[in-house]
Amino acid sequence: MSVSQAILRHLPYLRRFARALSGSREGGDAYVLATLETMVADPGRIEAGEDLRVALYRLFLDVWTSSPINAHTDHSGVAPAEEAGAQRNLEAISLQPRIAFLLHALEGFSLPEIARALCVPEARAAALIDAASAEIACQLATDVLIIEDEPLIALDLRALVEELGHRVIAVARTHKDAVAAIAKSPPGLILADIQLADNSSGLEAVNEILGSVSTPVIFVTAYPERFLKGEPPEPAFLIAKPFSVDSLKAIISQALFFDRRSHVKCNNTHN
Image 1 (cartoon, rainbow, N blue to C red):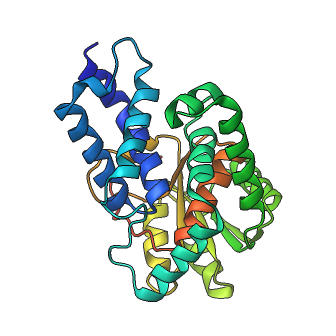
Image 2 (cartoon, helix red, strand yellow):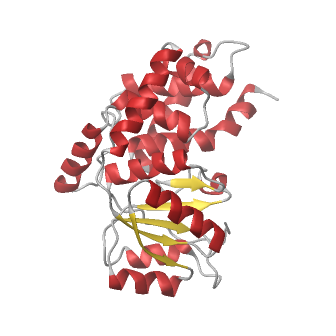
């Protein structure tokens, strides 16, 4: 396998990480593109024989910290009040612990891999993850709407969300149920499956809901790579089935930090 082919295998997940870190598809993808451009301009940044995934993320983080693409946070298209809120939330958790936590919880990096990606000792990497976990636990809880047609997955989602200190206001299995639930009690966060029990799309349900309320959205799918190709429209926040409490915690924290809409046009791709 060529280096370019090997890199292509990691790109969907690097985009996911970049979007979670920056809070938007546009901001995250801009940093990924800058990373690839840096790699082409200076191939020596990736050493021969090095773990390509770790090296790719380390190079991304080098670009993230040195490039003024969006000053660590993408504010494009955000109203001043929303921008101020996003900044306040970001300041609640410092940058390096948040990066370490995302590498661990979202990308599944081991502690040695996180240390190499961040160029820090393993003890420092462990301390950063612990710090992020403590800071996340201090964030305000919110009301959550779960849109999921599979009962066992919905049960797991509910348990994990409540374990994180949030309150589940409803579990909707269909587009109609989701819209009805919103009418009764607007949530502070939506967790939505892509494909629902009545063969409707969770994307359609979310877009209809966001026509009347503004709330962050996390989409759930068994095939995240289908929605992380770098071609719009794509969700800013995405979690893959099966999910863990750490990955769910990481994505929920990021979505609540940025607290922005997640409109995505529907297509024929199933979950």
